[in-house]
Image 1 (cartoon, helix red, strand yellow):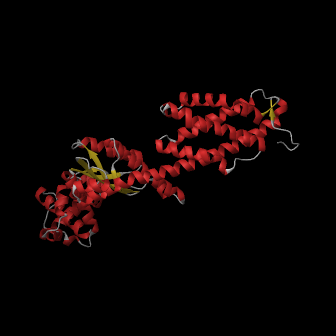
Image 2 (image 1 turned 135 degrees about the horizontal axis):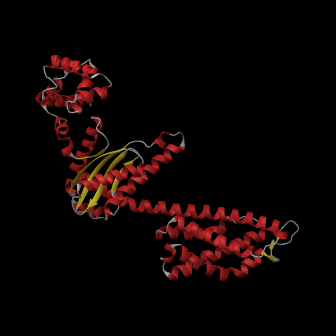
Image 3 (image 1 turned 180 degrees about the vertical axis):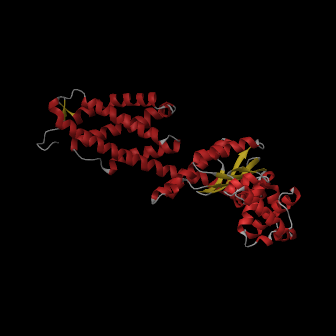
Length: 407
């Protein structure tokens, strides 16, 4: 009621009474429009649309009429059925945006029904009705979203727990039959083991909550990109810096396909990705994951560019990084250069550019003659000449051994 106890009226009729009288017919029109405009509702069973969906539409329209009659917001207990329906839609996999769109369509059609025939003299009542409409819409969106997300979170926990258990069992090397009994899931015939390192997104350097939001968004996008490769969820243990993923595959995929996956992943997360991959049957996964983790660490330690790597790409470095009596001897070849960081840096740059003195000079921002001078000093101190291919190979191996020992 308004302040003088007269009802809210538009076009000469009480808005609450007019809306209540039109609820049955309006409900049918709203439901028809939902099925016409929102494909997810068209795909629901007809009896569900005619039952639960129509019931929620009708309840929400009657609630709107109650709000207009008493000129006050909806009470918490009046939103119980909307919450229950949102949770049910979450279990069915109906997207939240479709549910909120449905409420918006119903609200708009209710407003069209009661505002038809409005006259200039109705301005005050029209404004008040709109105020109540906006408050109710905010309450509905808040209640429905909270119930949906709570239900979705519980479902995610239930769905992810067996997959996390399967991942842990595979990495521990448990027998396949034991894994199936304990997790209720049967391992795929083959997996691509991935170890990933993801650089920070620029937004992760922002102050406050923005950095945390950016990190969570990056993890979600990373998970989505990995899930899309095999057409089913990957087994993952991920954080904002990367982690481990097992991609179920029927057979070993082409290397180009895996490289394409990493490229798409980089674009999705908006940050550089360094990864290593190896394909293995379930019983070979512990060794495969250990190997890919070593490869990623080695790639990052040797300042290689981001991208996807396999053992063949780092054979020499990988072999030299294994413990052996020769490792210390190789590293010792560079001992004369201790305390001369400019010579070590020049050697690394010169070898990385395939003995190209001009390319090395450009990378070091020095004159080519300076590179020549430093190379001669390296040769005098170590007894190995970087310009000679055989000596260059020994020096390259010595650098790898030195980095390995110092790491």
